[in-house]
Length: 143
Image (cartoon, rainbow, N blue to C red):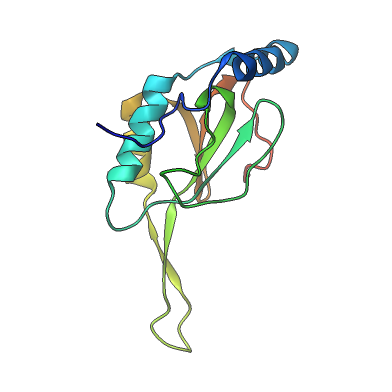
């Protein structure tokens, strides 16, 4: 049995009513569900080397800080997620004082996973944005 929280964790009648009220007030339409979010969460939890950073915006307006912990720090319940950003570049430490640090670009592999799951998403720069609701919000998204 898996004791880790999943996409629906933290949802109860009070929380659901708050989410539903925010969605209705902003005339948002859901384009994701807990099944998709759980596939995404489980994929990144299964990685052993590197896990990308992420942040999210709630339908109530809160934008989280960037985080890299995929087990307990996620924005539960995911029904509240308006958008979810994933950092695509893995920093590689500099190999000396005079050499600049570099990055490993994971854009292709992460985009493929997100596409296979069936999310509505877009990539800009080093960020992949998954939408939980439409209309799509481009707030604080690179050009």
